[in-house]
Length: 374
Image (cartoon, rainbow, N blue to C red; front, top):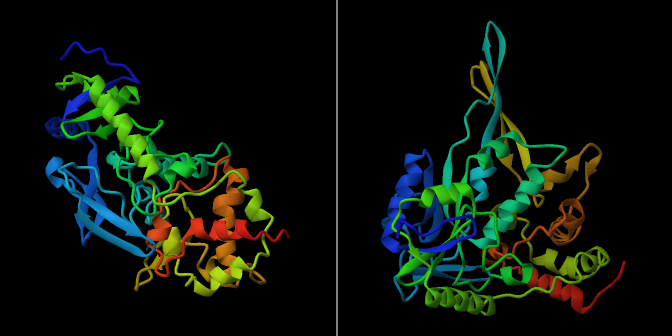
């Protein structure tokens, strides 16, 4: 087995029990291994040691405003589709210190010095890889690079998992981001009953596999994986026609559907917080009670919060209608001009976790059904 030629782009078979040594090797290299676990009846991304920590034999049922963990009917480790959490929390933390001031005779400034952790993210879905790439475009621009994001991103090792079991709110096939990963990973797994097929994406991924008891990818296993991915593409719970986006949205800014959806929307910001590509943020200052220490932090914000659009002279988006329209037309419209891609990857989180069951695929279909060009 040791003489199997390995190179970037090669696909090999890894016995399932060898995932534990692979994760152990990553930890030996200084990575914290993070993966899907079950907590409070939902999938969360937390430290894992090995196979025993993964949600084996479980999957999730997801529909608009509904999420439930159920038995998958088999013993695979990665059948489960993501929950509310996304991987963006590890590159773009919900709360992070930017700088501090300490009063000791005079004021002394301390820049944030927390070093970026070395993280190995295990079980990243193709749609989530696409989301990370979209956030790269926002945080790693030519004219501005966010140092916190850059350092965390540079230190990460990504183990993707192709998606064979999409849920009811998934539409990544429509967005061209899944169910098969096309790049952006160090290693990519496709889980079959007996083995993981492992595609090598980078030299770093190749180094991690060296010395493990790999097997040549069997033709029958490759065909099973291809058939599974083709079936997953057909079983997406949602579809979305994107051929006429963003033109459809940006030329229907006065469509009555905006008011109709605003009548239901609670402007609670749930959709933006679970979205793996949204990146609105604000800064907050915290001062100790004795006034000797103060800290400026960056925190997640949302364009659905009324205060987000408040500026000198008033609020540019004072109504739920204006805030929902801004979110949808940015995500599926002006984002394309800004970053070269649409801002949605079709993961379906905004549909699953909306408390009033607003569905972006239905809203865009409603706009298309009765266009009112402005």
